[in-house]
Image 1: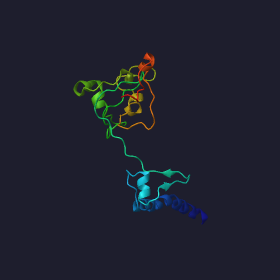
Image 2: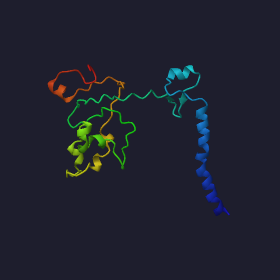
Image 3: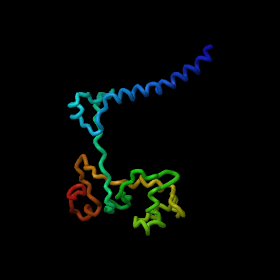
Image 4: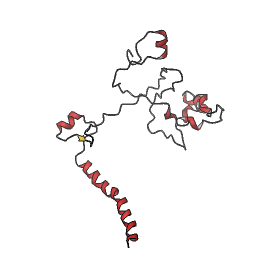
Length: 177
């Protein structure tokens, strides 16, 4: 008899999280905090900010910064820095089946798109052997290349590019621009 009850008990225990999900969603939906709310807005609304088990108060996230989409190439700050992406990439398919980046940056399409061709280093395997197609190590562009946003730094930036360090002059990169 006990052997027959064990599978039933295990099935019920595994279903408990699924049964609790609708209750959690309902609790969240009853009094949501607007996405752009600040801590001050939360306090003014009379709704308490969420406090975690560790005693930290969780604030609503600030709005996402907007992508820079001016298509202007940026100067690199150090040798071998991957170029940054000067356009929006939201919605680009980039998986094992397709790479949207290659529709403009592959060698055969750069004439029409006027986009810079991907580097020859993207056609080398880890042993330095030249391949006929993009290496699987370099296929997922967003591992190294990042889009730019209009986000302002949260702390002062004192970074200086290598040229200004060598010359010994010029303001840090984050200032004076």
